[in-house]
Image 1: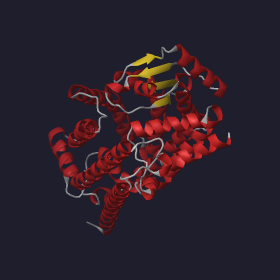
Image 2 (image 1 turned 90 degrees about the vertical axis):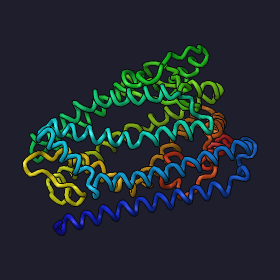
Image 3 (image 1 turned 90 degrees about the horizontal axis):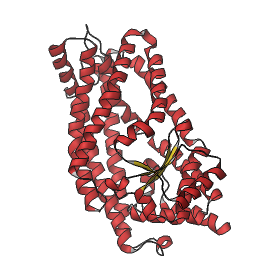
Image 4 (image 1 turned 120 degrees about the vertical axis):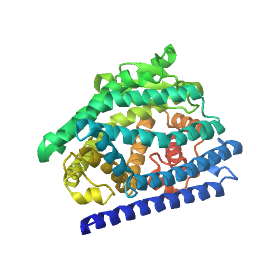
Length: 424
């Protein structure tokens, strides 16, 4: 290899090793911190969370963290297998020999890469669902339903992803040096279309969405939304209990397609006032334009990423530095896409603290909005129930939170809410 390829290989190895070690170190900190605080409920929660529930949350979080460390180790090994150990190069050369160069060979390469990756992830997904979630009483999915969900997901991916991939690869080969601008426009349009179609077309393939049929609750929700200046296409209850005991509610869609969705598990756990508060929190995200800001950020980051890919895809060192020999007489666009998807997460790992910090700030703003339009005490009590029922630990490691948690820890979040409730 030349100097540029060797240098890029070294950068890749340093990023991979640093990412792996940081994950292992932070995960170990999280496990030790939670284990040290397992024996007693934090004083601020002693009147609301009993010791068995606190210990269940601790054990659940420790188990999931250990599992995440295992999957991170497997992921690092698979990444090395695809790149420096020659897996992707072997797959590409085999398909070139069998099919010859062209668009269909490139589509087949991405498809084969996705299938192999999915098969590698399958045992881990099964273990997470039928061992970890089942052990702590959260899994309600049968093996048959789990398999059907997997097949449905694959079919949706094929139906939606194949035309999109074919168009992207065609643009990369036909649009010249500015192909990435055309792909960026296509990607933005696709994401906006999904915001409209997902709630009404894709989500119903996996869950049943029935109109909310509780007149009293329906009236409360509509009154709250009117006070907040929001309209929605409908209020729906989702059969989340078919797969999991976890509870949630969300406000989804875009423009006139917006809808409010409650998990049936949430309605079974919370009082009407608490449901109002949880919904007001979700409305707060829309009021502060958090969703719009995230979409804009996605577009900016994807534009920068595609510009970087547009440059890297024309450089020999980008391929050889990651263990792949590009074809001299055939397009390498699919190879470039796959290598970029493999490399980018190593970089994004180091900016995750900034993303997490921004997300936690958004959660505080949504809580404040909910406190203005409902009772802060109702949101606090709802969160306490959800922390308990979802076995969310009350004692996460502070540094782990800074890196990975999109939501503030319970102590900070409930502390602010209780201060608001007291001063109200």
